[in-house]
Image (cartoon, rainbow, N blue to C red; front, side, top):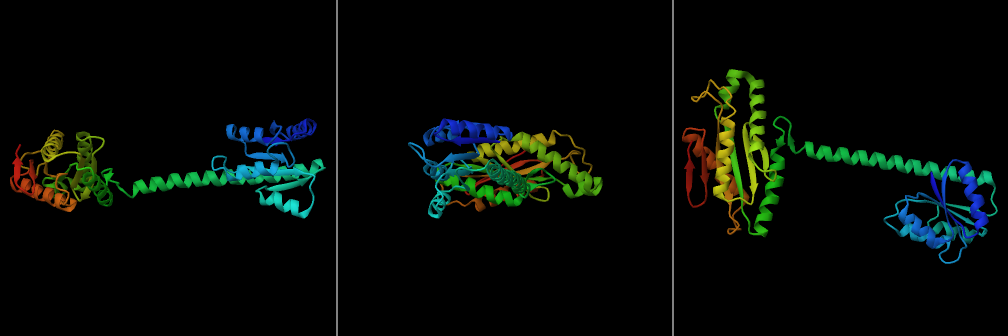
Length: 319
């Protein structure tokens, strides 16, 4: 363990250094509190043994400074002094010292006290390691509860969290965003023909094709069943509709056999809608409803196509 000795008497400092090194410790020596403070800031020192009476910054002042620093972290501090009155001991411990050793001390006494400090620091390190592991697990859990385990995209809960943030950002900065709703055509008949395991497989493939069709900054969610919702920040209705048609085309290009479809391959239908930053009163729920209505229109027009919807007009793009 690295231990910092703070001692203004060179002979005492040398003797203490030799003693600690004989116990297997790495030792640094500072001649006063100011030098010690500079070492604490530059080295990962976790153990300090300091004399109380020194020129400049004394041991008690150094201890207070270390305890008031947020950057230093926890440092075990033993105060060495010839002051043996009860009020002196109280003053030293009140300054933040972990232990108080009165000079002259016996070698065995100091060794026991150093070992006690080591145990405390080891326990603190173990606790910190456990806390870090717990934080990593909590972060992983937070991600898992927002993820659809089958399609490996966001779930409906995460959609609600995300759309609210995207909508508020768009309102604040008068920007737009798009929403696309996609639905796999004739999915029930696919399950009937190829089984639910086959249906699970194409859900994953459609999710992958969707992910490859959008930007890294876009957000993809499983909204329910075979429905996928995509949120596209800073897009208008025209660009959102083009992205929707790109997704539709990429899914069709997978060329997945579907005997229950008139086209013979798996396809999807999409509805597109957009929030216009110039209309801040428009709610995201309304935009989602417009995309849903556009999806219904695409289904009713024969599937495997994209329709877009706005408050003013609804237009379709067939393919």
